[in-house]
Length: 366
Image (cartoon, rainbow, N blue to C red; front, side):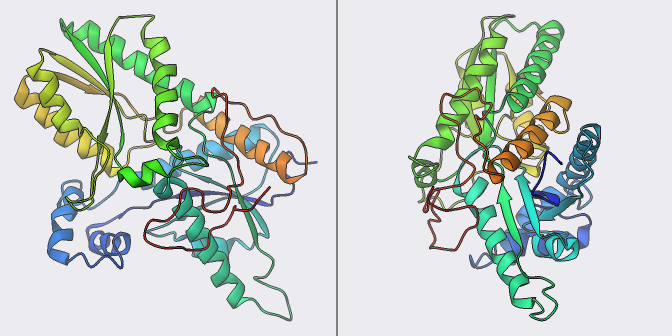
């Protein structure tokens, strides 16, 4: 029996991004749909993509991840198709599900942490896609009906993610110290800022977004302390909300200025909040933060994201198999660095939508 039974397909579900200059504005309009943001404001953000030929790096990152997942699945004797769907760009989620023709699919999202934007919003989009496909179903042939989708749990606590992040951070820090030898280096862990209220309501009991990041930071720092006593912090990038709405702080740019004023002369940035090189990584960190560091005279480098690191890929396949065992009704003990792994099936209202209720998949009382 397949270790992924009862699933007949795997889907990698991601945010998406433009692949040409012509795609940029339609992509940004899709991301901000319904918020009334004028094109003049979107054009400012579009410039970030224009600087890179109108192409987001995330799509090629996802292609490499999918290829690595297929290879790992094949090595374990699995031949199920691996689909690719995006929330905001082709291949759109509903199109990928429609074209696949699969009946039961297990989904892994390219977001490791629990929050509305990192988990529930994807589940809402899945619910909408399933509803759209059901509405198209042929009642006589049954084509398009009976589609069922499950999702793996948030996986920032899985050793595959943590070990890959730790090894890449340690390797980058070693090289940085050898090259620059700053007298007072600093390690800044970076993640995507979210509204304070979204963080407060994240996870089954609230506060899970920050709590899970703190767990990863401590796991990585346990490795870092083996090579150097170094100060560290958790900071944020990519704030996009209105000024009156509180978001998690400090911003990485502000933090670099504060560190410089305090006598720090070198900074290693570890983007543990991201599994791949989103635009938030290559622009907010590699361009803006690196530019600020240069202005301040700070030695600066950035740790690679986990991307298609073999440990990360093996961990994702382990999570797919874990979810399959749950679907078969087996008792599963999640592999985790945390004392309290998050569930695969969310309680109703977990990571609530602050703009209003929308149906979400993978949500039910146990």
